[in-house]
Length: 146
Image (cartoon, rainbow, N blue to C red; front, side, top):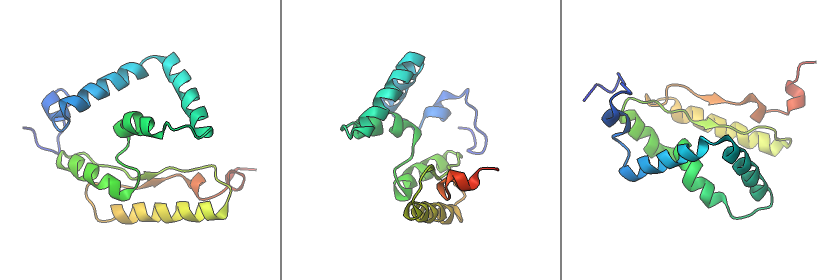
């Protein structure tokens, strides 16, 4: 097996060895569906409207797209994924990505979450840097150039 610091994506065992056959099949079908732009467009519209009307689709989203592209819903949920990817020499990024809010309470909550992600990353070699959206900390109008 190759060293964790040197990833060769031609070596499928190394690239996907940490995934089960079920996870690989699920990822294959997810990307197969996402390869059709019309399905993505209609699906995005349908999901956005279903969420807007509080229809019970969060579980479906969580078990498909979210499960593949996200490590968890909060910092502690991400710990397993961070450690597992770290074993393979792959770094993780904790990204609290909220924007477009208007309320000071929401800005304070975003600030606290961003600080928590930075503190979690501070001494973890598996989280090489931190990111956040400035638009999660202030109104768009405040950040616009006049």
